[in-house]
Image (cartoon, rainbow, N blue to C red; front, side, top):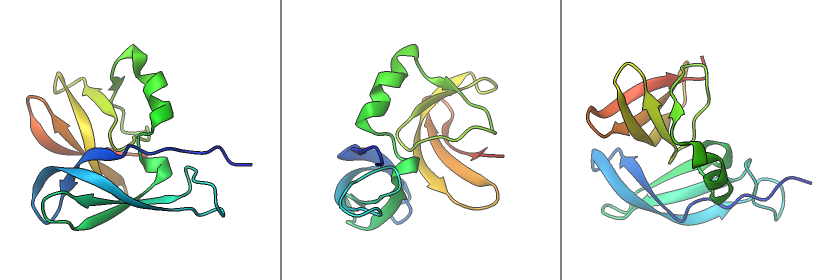
Length: 127
């Protein structure tokens, strides 16, 4: 039986229509394995300004159970690792930390990170 997953109700996400990071609210969840919401489920968020939506799989979202793992501080960015929207990372070269506010699926996958000093940057993941 799959482990249940509870996504964040509200996230700061990059809105492609507003062209900036905006608060986004969870609108609905689509369970992929019957009635249990897990990391394979799809979660739809809407921008609180323009009301446009974006969908993420649970495996790409920071959830309530992930907060227990963040006690060590932000994770060091490595291009080979997989990251979650809402996760805080630190970048060694930038000497800065930031929050992941979006993802682009492709070859390679990219994450959109809002750094405290450097602003919005795209970085690769899963290479």
